[in-house]
Image 1 (tube, rainbow, N blue to C red):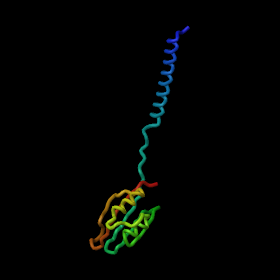
Image 2 (image 1 turned 180 degrees about the vertical axis):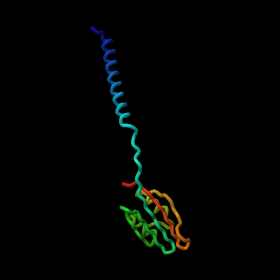
Image 3 (image 1 turned 90 degrees about the vertical axis):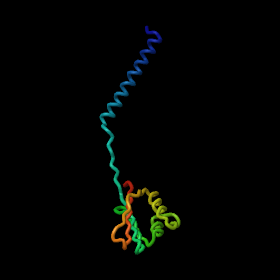
Image 4 (image 1 turned 135 degrees about the vertical axis):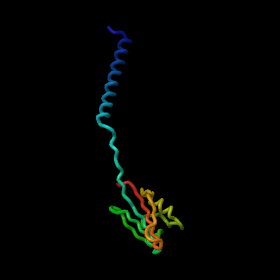
Length: 128
């Protein structure tokens, strides 16, 4: 007959053996699955066009998005759901509004002859 301490030692060894088997099985399944797959982010792009000499402003986030035209930045801001009035010189407020919709600034370029006053501003956000 086993003493109490022998029974406790045997029980402890049995529990340790089960824990090792569970750990080895988990490691095997993790290794068999291979390294995690890298998921490439798919982007959608939006373009803000500002033509200063004719006071034309438009936002184009197609395909699947919207194309909106306006005669002022304030009007475009409102058409895109901006709350309230756009303050004077409020391009930062406009950008923040686009940011609240997930848009991230990418690049701004002057395009065409200087007399045209065309500025192209690109934004991107993860495709949903």
